[in-house]
Image (cartoon, rainbow, N blue to C red):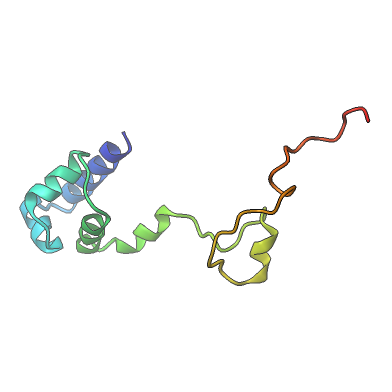
Length: 106
């Protein structure tokens, strides 16, 4: 469903720019069959998608796909101003215990 919707958007954008598949594929440096496969929602690579978006002069929108992970109001570690470089398992008790409201009788 997602790939199909993305393919339809690529096709609609290409058509709105009055470009044939062969023309856009040549501009992007990919084969026409690769473009046809992407437009049909049958998969492709991020590289092919980036090439198509660059050829359509909308490559800046590719970065809008993922949200910025640097700042999160829910993660106190993101206040440090430094980007995290590694993933570390939380210590025992921090994430190992199930959270509750604390309204249970003692």
